Length: 113
Length: 114
Image (cartoon, rainbow over all chains, first blue to last red):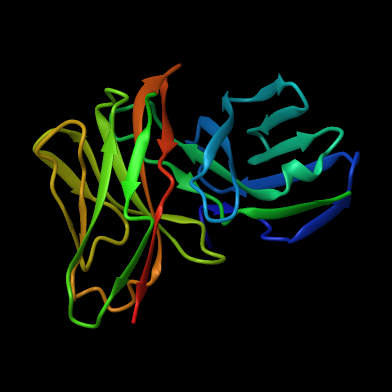
């Protein structure tokens, strides 16, 4: 079993829809949770960063962490065709100098005009 | 502009050749990382370095080598011992932010074995 599981999709939605992207994990020591967006043939860019449980909102994006269920989500409101990309969740267990992140497989999202 | 640069963007390798991928950052980050990305497998850590002249193996280091002679540079050599090197290679760097190391990525190098 992988430490982080993420449905690879693809997920196809109409423009304006609310999108929900999810990851589950098995390591209860994970405390830091991130979402990256990766456009085709580009490097990932950091979208959201969350510590421990709770919600964090940034514009149309909301990151949610439920440590009791070992489940994290990224919600995209009013989705746009420009949101079409692969979304990677990532997490780490400690804030030490190792900085090692564990990534999910990534979910490919397509937003249709 | 601060950022991470990787070169070349595309690289072709013949069987039995070693090739070196360049990664440079001007963000003044201490830590640097190399990942490999294959379709459907996410990112896998090859090597990482927390400080100049020091580096550690990641999860899939076999067939790869690195050096960290300067803070700004972390080149990756894909050796002939790597049996399946065709992949997208990503370099990242980090500085602790808010208690965790937030990693920033370069644009990647796509390596293809001919």
